[in-house]
Length: 250
Length: 246
Image 1: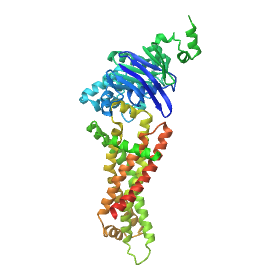
Image 2: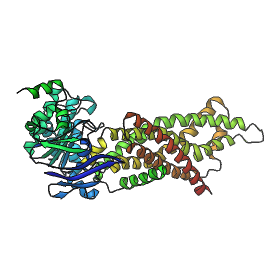
Image 3: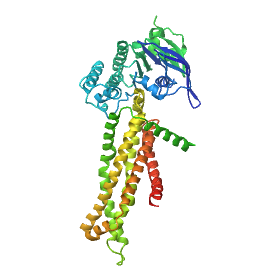
C-alpha cells in the first residue's frame, strides 16, 4: 500500500500539486487520470522521489519515504519498478542486458541464474527471440513490454507506470494494460498507472483518482465514473460526442 | 547569481560522482567501455592533426630562421619544444574538448531527456557516479597517452617532411630533436593533460546532466560543453604553466 498525505508541490510560484491525499491499494491497479498538464506526472514522480514535495508525507507501507536520506531511499527504490512514458530503455544495451542490469547491480546471482531470470521475465511479457536486439530495433509496443520485463526483474513490491500506452495503437495499448493488471495480481504489487486514456480506465481502472489543476477532485472505480456528478470529470471522460451519446443512453 | 548557482550545482554533482560506487565490477566494465569511447576512438584524429601540425611547424620555423648564422638544427629544437610544451597537451586538449566533450554532453543529455537517468535513479543507482566516474577515470588515464602519442607523431611528421622536401636535412632535424632535451617538459605536459581530462569530462557531463527539454536543448548543451570546457582548459593552462614552470 502507498499512502499520500496532504502533499503539495510548487515550481517557482506555480502550484502544481495542492493538498493531495490518497491511498493506493495493494493488489489492484490504481489509476491516476487527468488532462495533460493537470499534474499527474508530477504526482507520480513525487511519489517515487524524482521530485521532492514541498509539504506532506508519502508512505510506502509503514515507511515514511519522502523524508528519508538518499541512501535510505535507495533500499526502498530496489523494491520499485517503473515503466516510463518512452520506455527509457538504455540505448547502448541489448534487450537482455537491459533486463539484466538491475540484477547485475543489486544481486549476487550467477550469470546462469540471471539469464534464466531474463528469459522468464521476457516470456512473461510475451517476447521471444529478442535478447540480442537493441532498443532502436524494437517497435513501440515491444519497447514497453521490455521495459515492463526490466521493471519486474527484481520482483518489485511497487510498480509505477507513466502513460504506458502513449504512442501505441488502441489494441496494443490494451495488451499492455492487461499485462500490467495481470502482473499486479500475480505478484500482489501496489501498482499506480498514470494515464489519460479512457480505454485504460474502462479496462483496468479498479481504483481511479482524478486530478484537475493540481487538485484531487474525485476517486472511485471505473464503474462509478459513468454515474459521477463531478462536472470536471464528466468533461474529461465524456469529451467526445461518441462518449456523450453512450452516457445519454438509458 | 546564475554563475554561482551553476558553480554550486557543479560541485554538488562532483560530490555525487565521487560517492562510493555500488558495485566495482560493473564500474570496471563501464571504465573499459569508456576507454574505447573517450580514448581509443580519438586515436585517429590526434594522429592526423599531430602529423600535419608537426610538418607545418617545421616549415614555419624554417621560414623564420633564414639567418645563415643560426644553425639549422634549431628547426628540430623548435618543433620539439612547441609540441612538448603546448601543442600536444593544450591544443590536443582543445581538440578533444570538441570531440569527446560534445559526445559526453549529448550522450548524457539524451539520457536525461529520454528519462534513462530517471530510470537509473528509480532502480536505486547513483546515476551521476555510474555515468560520469568511469568517463573521468578513463580520460585521466588515457588523455596523457594521447598527448604522448601526439608528441611522437608530431615530431615524426616534421621528420617525414624533412625527408621528402629537404626543408632541413633529416640529420639536422634529428640532431635538433635531441639537442638539450629537458625530460621535465614531458612530465609538465602530462600533468597538464591530467587536469585537462578532468575539466573536459566534468564540464561536459555537467552540461548534459542538467539538460531540461528536448533535442534542441541537448544540442545547446553540447555546444556549451565545448565552449566552457575550452575556456576552462585555457585558464588551467595559464595557471598550471605559471605554477609548474616558474
